Amino acid sequence: MNPSRRSFLAHSSVLPFVGLLGPGYKSPQDFYEQMEATIAQHKDRKQVFNMCGYAAPAIPDLRVGYIGLGNRGYASIQRLGRMEGVEIRAICDVYDFPIQRAKDFLRLHRRPEPAVYTGSRDAWKALCEREDLDLIYVLTPTFYHAEMAVHVMASGKHAAVEVSAAQRVDDCWRLVDTSERTRKHCVILENCVYDFFESMAINMAHQGFFGDIVHAEGAYLHPERPLFDEPKPPLSKESAPWYGSVLALAPGNRIPTHGTAPICQAMKIGRGDRLDYLTSMETDDFIRAKTANALAASGSAYHQQFKNQRHAGNVNTTMIRTVSGKTLLVEFDAVNPRPYSRIFQLAGSRGFAQKYPLPPRIYPDGEHLADAAEMKTLERQYTPELIRSIEDTAKRFGGHGGMDFTVDWRLVDNLRNGRPLDVDVYDAALWSSITPLTLWSVMNRSAPIDVPDFTCGAWRTNPPLRLTLDGGGNTVVRDVPG
Ligand SMILES: NC(=O)c1ccc[n+]([C@@H]2O[C@H](COP(=O)([O-])OP(=O)(O)OC[C@H]3O[C@@H](n4cnc5c(N)ncnc54)[C@H](O)[C@@H]3O)[C@@H](O)[C@H]2O)c1
Image (cartoon, rainbow, N blue to C red):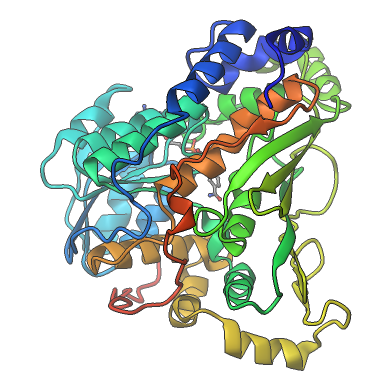
């Protein structure tokens, strides 16, 4: 049930910040009306083509382009630059330093020199027009992602997009529309679904080890983010204002995908069940405004923009119910001093698993904690084939302990071998849509809002996720240090 416009407007005091969530909102009313129009427009939408389980034609020699070569972009170049059957043909950034750094790495690894696109904020469009690319990574600040990914697919390439893939519900639909129309994948680079314990627990859940997963919890609790750091050109010059403003000022769950994605996979969301509606509640701000004002008072020119602003709440808590009557709890907190945690909790009718903030633990019967020997046995039995095959290499070349390597390698290997992908455009849209949906609910005194069914009903029959290698697993990684 959607609350009335009057209710919405009555709680619009947080809305001066709504424009920060994405381009195009002129006012609180505008946000409300656009959400309402988007929901109405897609109510009876029919799927054009089902991208879930779709195996695009194999591309043994994968030609890759990159847009955005900052923190995430350079790390990804270092991973793909080591893979056989991959050529990084074109790179794009608005600054020289990241371009030079990427070129230096590829030269060191005796890889062909990529074509460079730079000189303007729109240079990426020319990269998309190239005929000799199969896959384009979009690793720019978040507010660019949807526009760039749509353009990538419309230009006939698969898109690999960092989190979140979109910040508005209509943009989520645009990703779905474009992917189905072009039959090009839109993969969200959600690394947390490939963390080693999560992958094993997802596999266990799918094999019924925990019984029915009745309730699951996930989170992004990461207080040490330098929300008020001044950008250090050239690397974070573009992203830092986003971290500093949107994360600090706009309500709702601003980083939803890391917590939501693994529990959605464990609960077969999009592949047997779907998210029905959510309700979101947020605390007030007890830290940010004080910090921002103190920094501004210290004389920093950069921090004047945050002075005397009303800041978003510090902790966002969201409850989601699925159509089959199960629940998810998703939290976000980037401020309070607390241990890093993504929670990752699965509460089943037979067993229980949780990873954070304590080390991973499994209660096979819900009561006794599996000891080290039992955990080893479970790992031997349930670690998915994918993880077994790549774990050592992933740990060696790292990225958040190896899960970043796995997300890249798996994508490349599946595309090279014409295999379906683990994560599809519906996942990208769904996990990303949590941000605008929670914003809406918070602004409406936590009123429930329907979660769009981006699969248009296909969730009932979509094939199960399989973290196996059949027909793939042959992408060689050059074991070269540096
Ligand atoms: N999955 C994860 O664990 C994880 C971790 C951190 C960040 N992220 C996400 O990755 C994305 C990038 O974050 P980052 O830390 O690499 O940021 P960054 O600022 O280090 O890098 C962004 C790069 O994009 C470039 N850029 C900006 N506008 C551009 C344009 N118009 N054309 C071409 N290049 C442009 C910038 O110059 C910069 O080099 C963000 O969306 C963020 O949310 C994901």
